[in-house]
Amino acid sequence: MQAINGMIRVLHKNPLARSLWARNSCSKLFVGGLSYDTNETALKNAFEKYGEIIEAVRVIAHHVSGKSRGFGFVRFTSEASANVAFKEMHSKELDGRNIRVEFARKNC
Image (tube, rainbow, N blue to C red; front, side, top):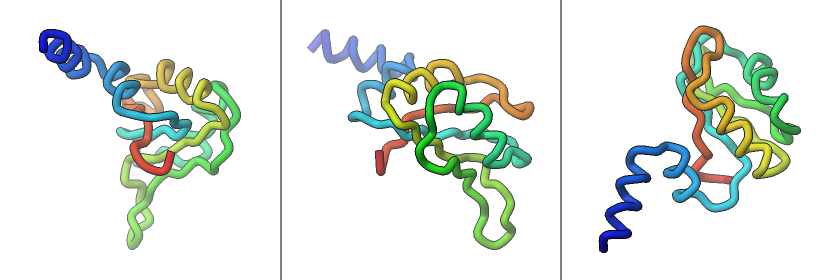
C-alpha cells in the first residue's frame, strides 16, 4: 500500500509523471491557455521545431462568434516528437500567455 500511496503523491505533484502514467501511446497534444489572438499558424510555428506535424493544427473557436476558445490541438508523426514538444513547451510563454501542454486523452 505504501508504494501505491507514494505513486499517487508523485502523480499529484508532477504533471509530467501524471501525463505519462495516465496515457497510452499518443502523439496528439492538447494546448491550453492560449491567447485569444493566437491562430493556427502561430501555434504550428511554435511546435513544428520539435517534429513533423501530421494533422492540421487546430485552435478551437466558438461556433457562433468564431472567436478562439483558448485551446487547440497538435498531432505529431511520432510519440517521441510529442514527448519533446511536451517537455519543452509546457508552461512556456506563447503570444504573451503561459500555455499548458498535456497529452490528449481521446483520439490519440
